[in-house]
Length: 357
Image (tube, rainbow, N blue to C red):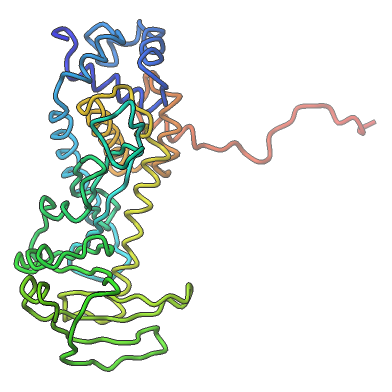
């Protein structure tokens, strides 16, 4: 490993992500088939599956985590001018986690259930541009709500969450930042109505109230007033109850903020479909976290390239183009532009007109 740098390791793993390699032997064979081009691509060490396996297992994943966080900061600056679905001055985040299933016999350290192993990816997604603001990895047994202990929230921001994060002690910590939250209430929480605001039931609203918690424990954990909003989703005919500490926004805006939470679900779906984080090249905790962080870094690098180079396509299409053009000696913009160029619908034909006598 002394002659196989972190940069060589990153290039190998990024190559595997971009081209969808199945294993270490596949990575080694494909890269060595382009041996004369590797130096120009930045490789300096010899490509060997055993060396790559040792690096994934023994070289700490933290360097790739730090690089990923650096890319997150860079990408967020590029996308901060993108329009938000809501007309708000606040930064709006969606917090959720995604479970990556593993085989318990192969990954015993990631014990999740009696016959199942898993890794969780806790993500705080900036809804302006769908760029993750913070990512934390844990085993499947870690409860989602514990992610609130490490998620960084700036003053004045709004975070929307599902019922799994309904912990009033942690919600009160968010309130004291001060930041705002919009969360779906559990069906069994106890409260007392202090004041009701007028509503228009034709919009789907059913209640807009100021409340205080009355549970013996919850009243101590969150001693201040909360806002309770009841809303009926007319497309699904489903009643939803939200809790928030933001008293200045219209009730419909609060409901719309929660609706935007589904962007984080779309982010997880995109990452799982287009990056290799469901099949792993190593079985140790370090190897798994290294692969996930490099996969996230690849996503961010493509997002940065799309914005900085003004590439006229979706991230998925750009990844498809990169997959078959990794060793081309042309600029990224030229490769993508030429790949998307369509031929004329009226091609010139020099054939003889057979009906012309």
